[in-house]
Length: 256
Image 1 (cartoon, helix red, strand yellow):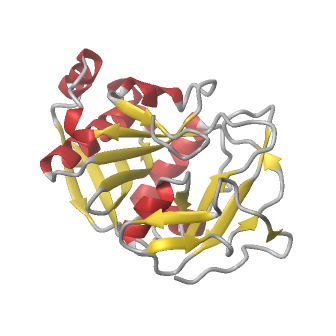
Image 2 (tube, one colour):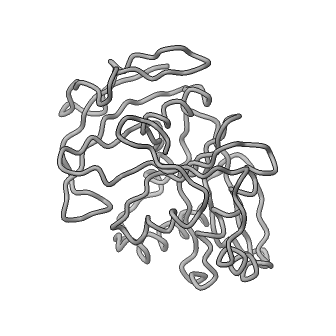
Image 3 (cartoon, rainbow, N blue to C red):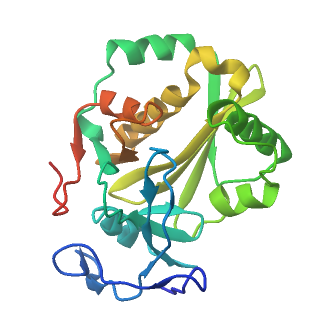
């Protein structure tokens, strides 16, 4: 594992939690003395708040160890791993679904029916111009982002990974309509990001992709499906609570 500061403005900081360690059944106790703490910045989920993260960068990271890091609140973005350490807010709560116990809700069955003609393919992530176009349109439609998002930023965000990563490609009558990126190990599937063509918003492709990833877990006997953070007051994030049964990581790093 290789770690490095992400910028000259970051500095080493004490770790949140009781021990400053990650406990792994495969790798033992891993000290978190390589973390760096970023500067305050506007929160992407609650715009009235500021956010801050503990971060490290890795060029090659064991997938099973990443599972253990997720159990201490970490998520991955490109080559970076991070967890929130906001002083005035603790609304970003990691959520995971008990995949083996998941049963389709009525709303999820309706979404499957709406997407009955959608086909999908699972393979290693592969950047294409078509995916960049859909991603740019998605950001503009869903997150009010301008057209300055570059292809290189998409590559570094989703198509560079130090762990084992898969890509779900969704097509309707051969047209690419959605993409889902996931990290995988023997114990979990972690949703990294999903984006879709805004022209197909009425068929709920975002939720459809999450359902397919959960069904993939069941097919491959993967126990847990990690959905990132649940943010109760953020409409674009609180849909995750509709997947049941689920667990939330509390402040002492216990799943409840």
